[in-house]
Length: 102
Image 1: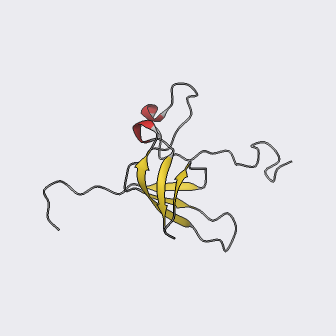
Image 2: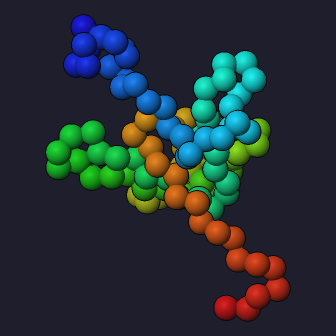
């Protein structure tokens, strides 16, 4: 039996989402799916007290319409294909408007 009483297979009752609306629902399972774009930051929360959060930047969106999997460049420099879990948060980073100088 899992630590949560076996009800959720040890994964908890929630999936990673960013405030879903009806457009965020997949047509086959009707469950919310995380949406992100290139440049957004992913934060994976530490599982235990004292564990640091993992941070990365999305360099490629491989799913359709902003859904996973994502190619992520992690803060330690390595890259990997990533499917978010319930402990993942996406921080949307606005892209600069075209033609604006810094």
